[in-house]
Amino acid sequence: MSRSTVVIVEDEPLVRLTASSLFAEAGITVVEFADGDAAIDYIRDHQGDVAAIFTDVYLPGETTGLELAGIVSQVCPDIAVLVTSGTHLGTPRDLGPRVRYVPKPWHPTDVLRTVRDAVLAAA
Image (cartoon, rainbow, N blue to C red; front, side, top):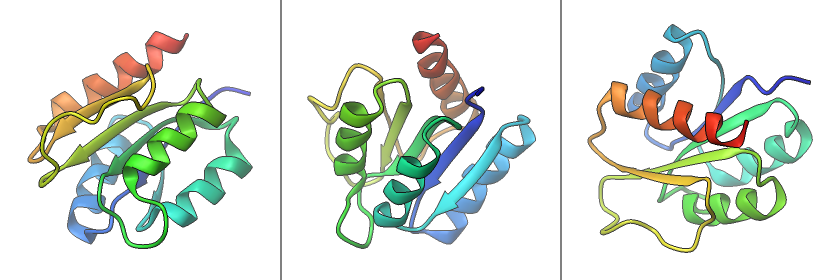
């Protein structure tokens, strides 16, 4: 099965909508979540469809964006992960070779390029 979905995990509705629109306009299937707990459940059930995850660092619930990135890197290493934050200082470390970091505010072109590069690196 071809991986074609980007999972967006962002608790701020406007930022989530902006990211979702960005990927949808690029012809990419999008699934959105406001917290890491729901996202990890979806990813476990649909990992064959997921090409990449775009997640904020700080999320409500038990699973933060950094924890989500770490789990996905271990359990589904062929899924690319892009982590973003407006308040996290520095680039997160030790999250796996396919995890990229883009600080907020991010530029749409940078996000698309980073996700595409990460996905292509696995091909």
